[in-house]
Image (cartoon, rainbow, N blue to C red; front, side, top):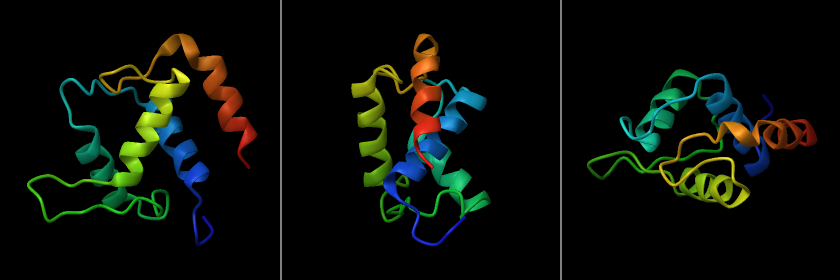
Length: 97
């Protein structure tokens, strides 16, 4: 991945992860989940910066991305993927190069 990942590119990466590996965020913290993914694959999640000074890792960008996904109807209030919007998600992912 090129240096300087854009907000849209990391949003697409996160959305692809949610589609390929649906997680029940009622049982897992989404911030911690993506923090662990960033540790495993730093180049895929380059844009996400986490504050680890608190009791849990926190990324303001990740929080905003999930707010955007909620506004688009891609996730519900529990941050879980809304499967009925799958065709719109595919269109979104295909629109980002």
